[in-house]
Image (cartoon, rainbow, N blue to C red; front, side):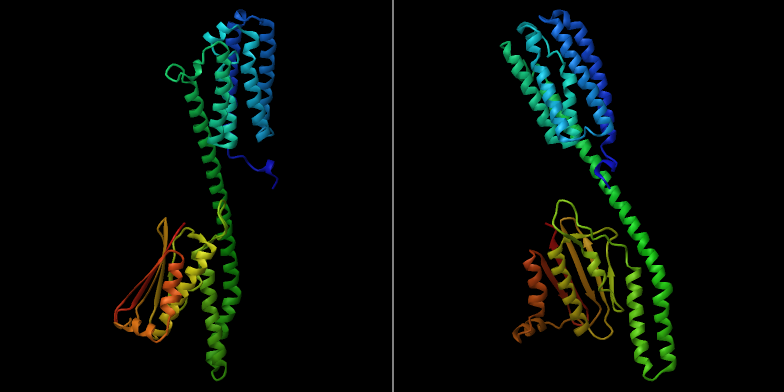
Length: 384
């Protein structure tokens, strides 16, 4: 979709800013009427006010219709504002400048700060305010008084900074909220499509596999092996289509990120129960791959050593700064001293494949086990 066709999440802020522009223009017009008779060059004052009026109209139209919401236009507005502030020296005496604000009025000039803050964020909004106030201070310098730098008597600088910060943060919040809403809509559509495909698979492939498994066992003989294969594939497909909708989409501002729920959920089986959070658990792709490999090693150990009837329970937890995956089984456990004996025999599956992997990720791998009491691994990696 073209950029200009996309809805602008900061649109309400732009519209509100133009209402402020209109009100500040009315104030500037009243100030012009009151002050023009005091100028040394009143005709030039009216000419410059005509420029101010035309620019106010142009900005209002440009920002409302959207074609002015770009860096070049905002910089142009800041330049025009600064030039009009400095033009006060052309129409008024030094004494008038020392006793008054600039003829465009600082209220009207604040529009440049607001525009920069909405488009570029709080830092640029405050920078625009500082730039404008520096020009204002330079104008005051012509009269020998840098009054604008006395914050105790003139808080204009503080106000400009506050406006730039507040409006910029509001614009950033609006854009982030809009991005989250779009992501939620995409996720909702993805889940709906997944459910549709799941229904199709269930009505077609799964039922055929179930029928093959049933008929194969009824026939017996060599078809029993075919029935067992069909039954296994049926269970695998049922696990796949019943899994929660996951969104492994890379996140802006980072490298490629992976939802660890996706890979861990695929390890579910007849004797492997997986529980994951409802929301995405994102990790750097390389970290996610190593963590998943460590989980696979732990599950392999359960299958090899916990006993034929043991069941493994895998739990994924998002702790904010850390992500933890726990693998617990109800098998025979590990007898005291068995791990040290395995290391002395040169069997390094636990020390290298699990503990070593987690240490390489600046994480931890904690094993808890006792004879006839099952085994539990707790694998933790930092989010950063």
